[in-house]
Length: 296
Image (cartoon, rainbow, N blue to C red; front, side, top):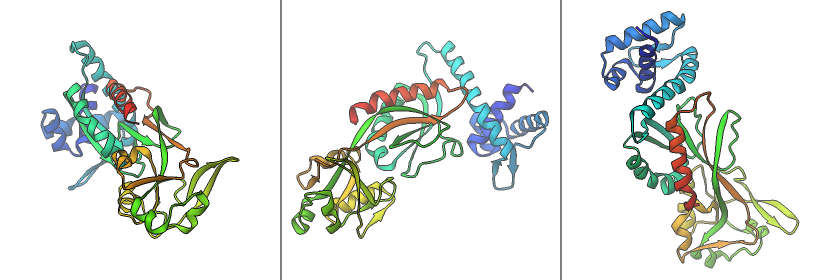
């Protein structure tokens, strides 16, 4: 059995999560997949999978081998596609991650256009406000809002979105409107725990940047939860402008302290640093850079 067949079977088992699922995925048989994995493990002299009656998971050696070989196989597939397809189209699975609210408002509406442009793609969109481990979760690319603190990641900046401090008209009618950041000490500030400055909101004054400690009766690790609380009149929140979208045009939503809120957050496409980057990742990245820029 040649190495390409062994590698194809190995990648299929990892991505499908099992031998029988891998066989269905690539149109083979479970016995053929098992034989290919056995031959590969014998040739390498290592065990690639932990096998049980319920699951098949990668060993540490298997994970390292997957991280090195998956981009190679993708590159071979991309080279084949470029020679056999007159449209230079891309195909295969793309596992894409994005923050929940930003993803729902800005990434999800772009997915139909991406699939229309590349009918051979199969997109798995993961929406979460927690930053996911791209290698461990086998994510092809992720869209991040804010600073990317991953030395082993490749970052392509799309643009930036400004910060806004927001409350409902009903809240301000009851509690009054802060005139300076210091006035926030007397207000109910809803804390988004996913923001670096979650309890110390960033502002800019005549002497430069400064932070104001805030507190309130509601906090969450979800932008949507804080957004709902603010719109319901519970308190004041600080968001990226892209997280509010249409709400900012609503007459019941009021931005405050505009002269003091000057910060921005970068929006970037990020993918794991690898020796070989597939044409699929490059093409999808180009699509999002072009399509997201006007939305920021």
